Length: 465
Image (cartoon, rainbow, N blue to C red; front, top):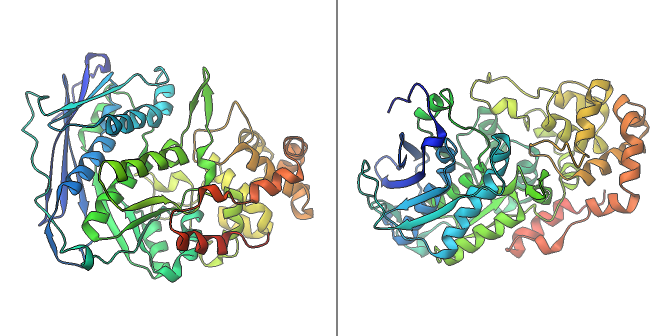
């Protein structure tokens, strides 16, 4: 459907989650959405990798997993207008299921709300029921027309590890190497495919194709902004486990992701909500209560700070020239050879985490320049420790940024750089040596549910500093 010349978000009263279907021949999942007034959307999710086991009929748990994925993926279209109501057509949600998605549409979209001048918490309700019907939409189709491994005994099991191209993924992969995990990526950038190839492990690839009408609407007045992409990727991974037979999704998300980015009128707004420990618990409950599934979900790096993970990554020199966390690399219009820009919060934060454990020349080789030698970088590094200006990016806790800077004041190679000279005293005032030790210490209460996985990660992460 062609977008209108001018789209008015205020004209929309409800966003609707419509039909969904899975084609086993093409391994394509089709997801349909629409507004009560305005455009409709069709998204496709293609499970590109061929399964290794024969499939038979999928059951209702697969259907439910697809439904939850569809609702979560709907945030990409809902945000066009952000109406107060989300209607799930043709399916009943329990109170707990509806609350899971309400949290995703509220907490997961709070940064978007702030950027667009909307209220936080975002006032949105989730309604469902088979009697709800969109007059222009086809009736919801049954999802479970596909196949799955012939029975539980034939499932290969094993760990599915999403890989994003950053240092955290590589640390987790090396920690779990003896378990021979399968890697997983949605729309992988060539850089991610290269990193996966270097590991020698299998990679499951999924392609998510947003409705192209979305780009046109964004040019004609639609609201736009950050969505909880990790939640969407996690639920694609859940559906993948039903198709490919894995029994655990092991994320590489650190504990720092749980800290709010800002307080807006006293309300926590977290750029990384769908990476937080709180969201992890919500999704784990959904898997157990809604799907009745024994599938394990969680982050094996949750007990650790970004600083501790950087310490573990520093010796993994085979990945230093290829990994990248700069978001410029993953833009659709980025060139294949683009790497670190050296001017964004992600570049500064990763450099700050690695600096205490690398020589200046080694870090400059990774980033492409010596950020600490550039006095123009001082405000950006200061923002990483700020209560008011912490950037809306995947950066860690304020105190661990201060901890890293304090460590640099104790390193002769670093302490006289313009950035450390400018900010070292502030960092030392914010954190003590015992605070630095606490940042590097593991939190055992956040350990991954599998003792074997938790122990393997601990062996790599909890080595002496």
